[in-house]
Image (cartoon, rainbow, N blue to C red; front, side, top):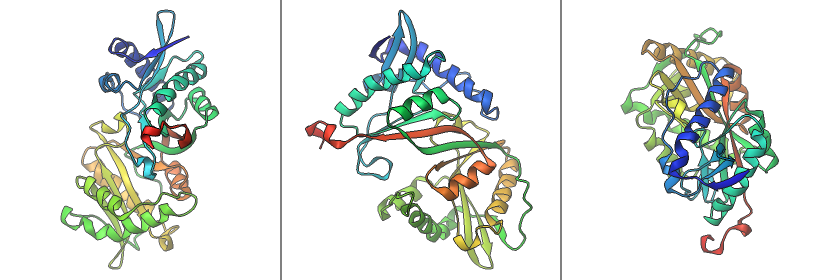
Length: 315
């Protein structure tokens, strides 16, 4: 097996491999939307952080990533992410191919000062998952999907449900802070500073927010946007949950399930047929809830490199 830099000449074959890998996952999760063409890979040629694998004249795999950024994944690390369309490998010996690809790509990444490596893998691709687990990666994030169909639970009439107007979205600021505090606790340890929380709220200005009320108090919210962390989420008939929280004292009351049903009905009336969500796997509340009602299709795995291995110029 020969590993080379990922170049313009590799894009066509790489897209074929990536498309085949996506179709494999669709066999397990048929609700995933069909795509004739996956996103272009030109940016991964330009950043010179990608690699390709060949056996003879045949490409058998590739692994690319985005340009790195600082303070990645709510840490002080310089990080990068390889989304599901930016890598792929043929089925035969896929685990071996991914190991060789990562060994070469990781050298480039570390030499570029990148200490936090994140890769989106398909949830049912056991070869890829085992390969990266063997090389020090652990699960961090999950993307999941469901048809825009109501849950079996009946709506709890003890609470009122509605969609907030744009001008009233600030009404959930307190719940956003509660969510931030929850994510900072064990076992999540995702500490969000005030500036990050404000930035997240600004970025989600085009989102839609649905709330549950008890008397006059907002006790839960669900927030959706048109797209999320991978290309599948941008399909026109899909909406994606980007924020959710229910006050602890109302968990188990059916409030959040009823709110989800209310939101599904509203989005369904608007013509949407798919609903996605992404969440941290180490958030036990989210993990248990979302996987009860949604089907996982990606596993986002992360490895943190010892900063002593990073060239001095980046430290």
